[in-house]
Length: 253
Image 1: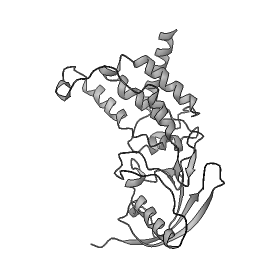
Image 2: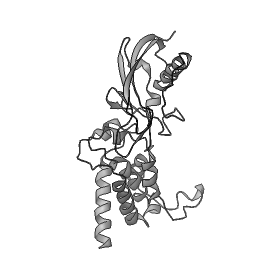
Image 3: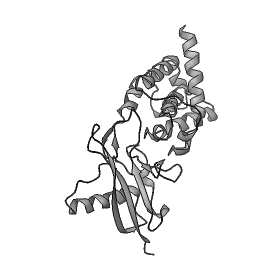
């Protein structure tokens, strides 16, 4: 069965550099297959712009399988677009209507400066992880995995937190530009497992300190981060992070 074709109008944020003034530019795309992903649509747009002798739209991407966390943009006011638990690269045009006008903008945050067009600098996340996202315990080889019993519920919670791909949608969606869901996920995935407990207190202190240093805001329980997270990470991890941080602070005193 042949794929349906639609014609759309995209209004894309164009910005030459961090310090340059940006604006929305309008482009028409005709007879686009609804089987295309959102990034494939941007590829088609860039081919069209190149043939017209114009500058292509800059956007981040890598695996295009919803794994790497490289892609991300605000589509019609929603980070990663209208489909829940879906990365931008896995969002398909079948979720849009013929003749629809689509607004595409970069993630916006003080800590995520615009590099060009839809590309933003998310290296702040890397620095947060570097501040304490590690374990020093020798975990052994794969065959040693069952030597330390871990309750299933605890394991599932750790795996849920570890699903975070660091895309930054939580920051883009939060009215305070908070990175607490991301930071909490990194704290939870290690503190819940026995191997991560030796650095448990120091990790909570270091990651929260690094998060604050980068200029992110604080959580005010709007839960927008949870709604746009492509991996469905719960804000329960933020509550755990707060408990871990409080316990670490009291312990250090």
